[in-house]
Every structure is written in structure tokens, then in C-alpha cells.
Length: 152
Image 1 (tube, rainbow, N blue to C red):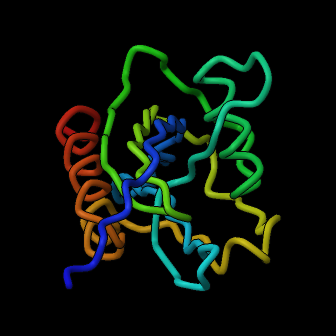
Image 2: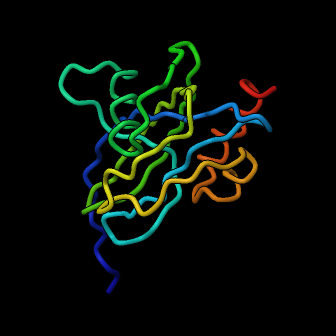
């Protein structure tokens, strides 16, 4: 007898993040986050999270950057953004996720690991190194787009 298929509930979710960049003397650096997931997996990602209250997308992205990395001295041009969309299953729900990333031009490379229960490590690296390090192809695509627009 065939297994009965369960119909998953569908939800949509939107997050806002930052591609933190710093222009070092020898080229651009990007800050990536080694996140510990709810399942205990480790992923290299860009800082991101959900808006709270009446936050604008840029305000949410800026707050998430500060919460996850301690970075506060950042300029975020609102006209430069990149979007990814993907789906996944979590707790018997099919989640359609959208993440809007803004470029964050960081004045320094100073970071503070403020959430050790959620973040294992913060690392500044070249964009090419970051593309090899990040865990998901859609994040590599964002880094490639940023490199083309910002770095040239």
C-alpha cells in the first residue's frame, strides 16, 4: 500500500541582510559568518535576519549586522540591493524564503562575536575566498553580483 502523502502548509518569509565590505590596502574584503543552525549544522553565510516592529528593510539589515558581528560603522546605500529566493521544509511547513541583501561599506574590520550560541566565527576574506567558503550557491551568486557591481 503506498504511503499517504502529507500536504505541507505553505508560508512565505522575508529577511534582510548585509554584504559587509571593507576596502583594505590590497583590495576588497567581505565579512562572512559561521552560523550554528537550529539543527546544530554549521553554515558560512552573510549576516541577515527578520525585521522587527516597524523597521524598514535597511534598518533591519543594519540591526542584524550589529547583532551578529558587532559592526556599527557602516554606510548602506539603499539603491544597491540584491535578492535571492529559495524554498525549504521546516517543521512540516514549506517555506518560500526571500532575502534582500544591501551592500554595507564598513569603515574598519573591527568585529565583536556577540552571539556565541548562534555564531561560531566571523571572518574577513577576499570575495573569491568568501565564494569558496560560503555554504550555499545562492550566496555565491550574491557575492559574484556584488563583485561585478562594486569591485568592477
